[in-house]
Length: 392
Image 1: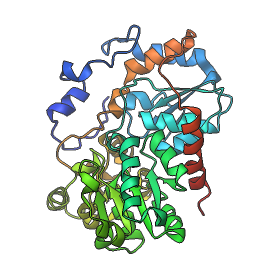
Image 2 (image 1 turned 180 degrees about the vertical axis):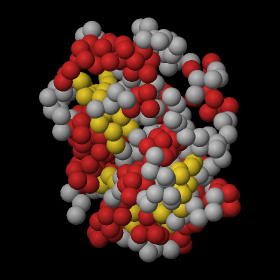
Image 3 (image 1 turned 30 degrees about the vertical axis):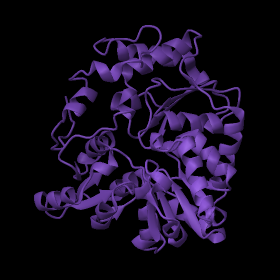
């Protein structure tokens, strides 16, 4: 019996592609797995995944990010957000293989935090992150040169979101900065401003702005946006000198799509609804919401919500759908904030065929899709991660 709850959303062509009901050959070029990838229609996929997982036993530890498909989450040993999963991996030194069902930057962080003897596997190497890709090492180095020429680099410290590449974490560590998550962004910024006048926040402008304004009491005028595609970031030396938060022009393609109209529409459609959104959403969306918090906060809030309460949630659809099904029996109505389907396209690349292929390959002694970070980058990135771990 199918107990899934409808979320009253309309699938777009991209969503249909991600759901396996459409095709776009151009988007698939160059991302085939070596070897034979099982067909999605294979009726034995679940049995094959289970058999391979049993053969690997304690040699493998499977991590599943909250945004993953249900079919993948079913085989995860632990679930969580990106940093929780990286820490969980580091806490399993006996596991030879860390199979990370998430995206590339998460697997990199796991490799940084685990021992040299452990091997981190990403079932599909095309599972990247559009936000992380919005800040390259070369662009950030050029931005630092701009800050130096403006005379503000000495009073600026970088803070990078966990959703960034190992190269950006290394840059942050090299310049005395720290990493943050959406859960501890406030503590990270408080730490940063204790010893510095300014923060260069990478790569998500919305999390940086929302935390600075909502949590630290800064004004929108204290924030400027550095655009790496414009000369000098599109900013004058005076703007850089007067700003407290220098925000990188990056965003999450999922959370950035929620609008103020989305909030207004759901309030009209569902009387008494509570709007709960992630801080990666735009500032005007966050300001109009009833509750704001990280993925873990969203889950905890809905878990503690009273029966009969109504919620519109602004985060990735796989998670919203899972929570709607989980709490339907408790009389909680949970809907997606937007009327249009919006999965994280790169998270959805990790599907059951890729997971089966990875697990079966490992069980047969073939190490596939290993994610490694070079020693220098790893060392500098670890500095930034350890500063985060030391935050009060």
